[in-house]
Length: 122
Image 1 (cartoon, rainbow, N blue to C red):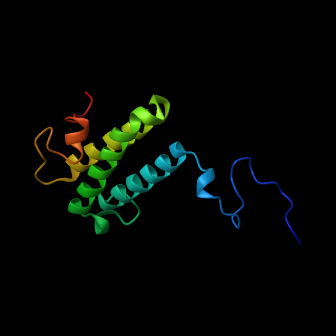
Image 2 (image 1 turned 90 degrees about the vertical axis):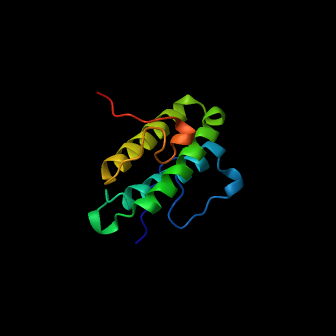
């Protein structure tokens, strides 16, 4: 028996593939940033595996790459798309600082050469 339930608009069925030429740049950038954020969260020990996956060296690389991408893309994708990405980046930068046994000086943390120093909100 076949399920004839229509797919939500804009979301291809599981067995369909989208032609990359049809995907808007903002969507590609968003997808890449989500993957980088997820990988960084895992390396920070924030995922299901927790402390077993903690690897601050790997997290630093991922967060720095994420900061460079978001900083470079922000003027192109607009603030409505960039703002939530910046918020996620900032959260990861603060989580990195908390996870570090010897936190970096402000401005020296991962990605801070692109974003500027990150401080916890009081």
